[in-house]
Length: 66
Image (cartoon, rainbow, N blue to C red; front, side, top):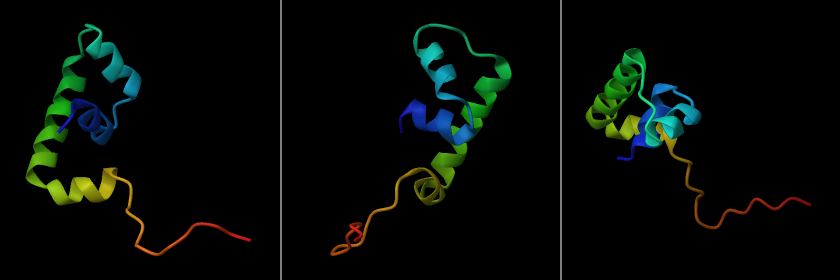
């Protein structure tokens, strides 16, 4: 699992993730939210996939309209 997905799942803005990757420290409460999200994702992998990943189109379907 990538960390950006855990931030997204926890409802933390991407900008916070980006700042963290650049060395800015997280607040304790933010770190706990991300930790909880990682644990929840690991526990319920299928729920995470349904919530965060784009839906796959069925074969043979098109999105063109006239």
